[in-house]
Length: 121
Image 1 (cartoon, rainbow, N blue to C red):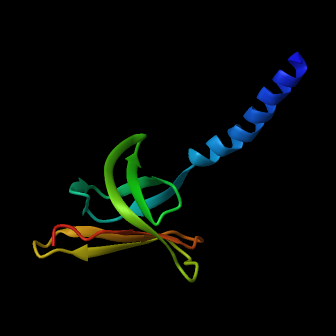
Image 2 (cartoon, rainbow, N blue to C red; image 1 turned 180 degrees about the vertical axis):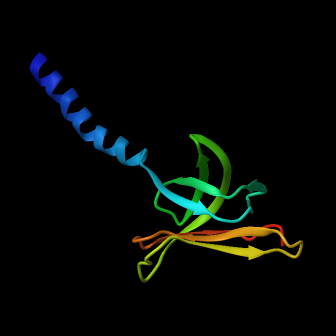
C-alpha cells in the first residue's frame, strides 16, 4: 500500500514537471538598435538589447533588457513571417513630433516578428 502511494506521487510529479517547464519558457532574442528610439513611452539609446517575452502569442508583453536590467516593457503582436531573413531587421517609424518609434523587429533566421502598437502619433 505504501509503495502504491509513492508510485502515485512519483507519477504525478513526472507529469507535472514537463508542463511547468513549458509554462515558464521565455522566448529571448538579441537585437541591436542603431538609433535612439521610443518604445512604450520609454526612450532607448542605441545599443545591444535582449528582448524577452512569455508565451506563443499573438499578444505578448516584451521586455527590453540591457546589462541584466529591464529598461523598457511594451505590448506587441507575435507574428509569423513567410520567409526567413538573413539579418535582424529593426523597423522604425517617425512620429509627427519627429521622434523615432519602434514598429517591428524581424529576427535573423527565424520566422518570428514582433510588431509593436503605434503610439505617440
